[in-house]
Amino acid sequence: VIKANRCTSPQFRQCLMAVGPRDFEDGASGVGRSANWLVAGNYFECHAEAQTVALQDIHDVTFTRNDFQGTGNKAIALQKDATGATVAGDNVKGSGYKQLVEIDHSSARKGYRGPDA
Figure 1 (cartoon, rainbow, N blue to C red):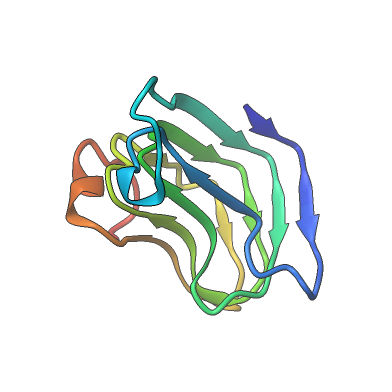
Figure 2 (cartoon, rainbow, N blue to C red):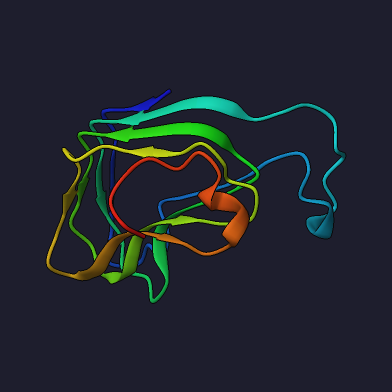
C-alpha cells in the first residue's frame, strides 16, 4: 500500500519506479511476484519528460484518488508485464501532463481497466 504521501520537488524527475522480480534485463532474480498493490490518495508533483510513476513486472495495481500535478508526457507509465492495472476515474491529471496513463508495452494491456491508453 502506497497511501497518503506527498512527492513534490522541482528537482524530482520521477516519484515512483517499481520493477518486479522477472525483469531479467536489469538483473532480477526471477524469484517471487510483485502484485496486489494499492496506490491511493497521494499527491505527486514531479517534473519529468517521460512519467511520474513507472511500473514494470508489477501486477494488479489499483490507482485511486491520486492527484498528479507535475509535468511530463504521462503521469502513469505501464511498462513491460505490468498486467492487471486499474486506473480509477477519480485520479486527477493536472494540466502539466499530456495524458494520465500510457501503456508503454503491449503486454501491459492484459487485464487493464481504466481510461483509454
